[in-house]
Amino acid sequence: MTYRATKIVATLGPASSDPAMLEEMIRAGVNVVRLNFSHGVAQDHIERARLVREASERAGREVAIMADLQGPKIRVGKFEGGKVQLEHGAPFVLDAARKEPGDLHGVGLDYKELPRDVKPGDTLLLNDGLIVLTVDAVRGEAVHTTVKVGGELSNNKGINKQGGGLTAPALTAKDMEDIKTAMGLKADYVAVSFPKNATDMEMARQLCNVAGAEHGHKPGLIAKIERAEAIPRLDEILAVSDGIMVARGDLAVEVGNAAVPALQKRMINLARRADKLVITATQMMESMIANPVPTRAEVSDVANAVLDGTDAVMLSAETAAGKYPLETVREMAAICVAAEEHDPVELDADFSGQTFSRIDQSIAMGALFTAHHLGAKAIVALTDSGSTALWMSRHPTRIPIYALTPKIGAQRKMALYRNVRPMLMDTSANRDEALAQAEAYLKVQGVVGAGDVYAITCGEPMGAPGGTNMLKIGRVG
Image 1 (cartoon, one colour):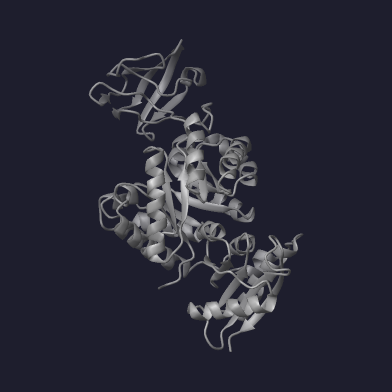
Image 2 (cartoon, rainbow, N blue to C red):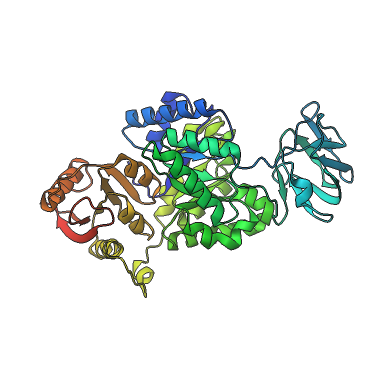
């Protein structure tokens, strides 16, 4: 099987919940399975997590589970007949107090705070920006608008304010309950929707730690960057998160489509420099919901995210509800591999002028640099927590990184790290025995053969978190 550095996140849904299909998707290249908590109830997610673990075991490949929280419901209410057709120039009222179903003249709101968040002159974008309304006046609980761009508006479509500024909290009462469910099923990552600042992520971390304590579990936290307010605060959000998601749907509606590609590059670069993870998401292979092959534009989109250095590319409806979930994963994997062949490796320039205050981080960087210049077959990290492998994965190299860990939780978490192949292996507490075990294991796995050079890092004493302090260059006899 061709080695692929970029990871694939696939969303589970009706199209991919069959055990045989899920197993095939994992074999085809899925590294992380996303459970979308916007749909279904707690028992659905518990059952799907069980399916994932069982399919993963049958496929012989550990995958991570990501619980994606719904976040605030900034949406219109329901319509009589399910939808209306809005005409350009027509008046339309968004009324937080309205109880009856909507019609051509107006609709109720799931998001009751809207009247306090807007003022005359503001632009509201509904249904991912397909409907555009201008605010004329706010009278009590009613927001009076004029339709600037009309079209079909159906039940529960989302509302964005151009330029951002909606005050909805990132974590709702539902999210807090969902965090308990996610910790019960030991989700490896929790994705937080619509965070505005570091405080939102710190609150999510606290809730996860409290809910996870009884299960002995702490997840990685991913901040979904989809609000305009989050952009000036990227550094502070990154500092308290384990990674970010470039959530291009809502973000594009708030900041404008044209601003997103440059923001994507900036976010990926910022995350890698901060030793954090980054997922690129939304409409990556959208046409494959209905078609067996992607468009040329989608191929370029995925390839560009890979060349930008993203850890993972994500599939949403394509695998949750599309006609071709398995084919989509295969296509995406092939695009990643082809793009990686042209990924520039500039380790010398990457390390120029850098200093490292930690011994374990210095060893990780030394392993990368030495393996690159020796033309090593593999870089191996004996790691308890996965930190060494994470640092190594922040720099582009064509040498695969094999992370050997005794902890299943660390193995699953590392499934998201670019260019890291995590493996479960319990080693001896004796350093020399552990190194010999690692080499023997890699030979059995077909990673290295006679005459191959590899770099290996470990800590002494063995098994101490953050204790990596040794680099050895080995040659297979």
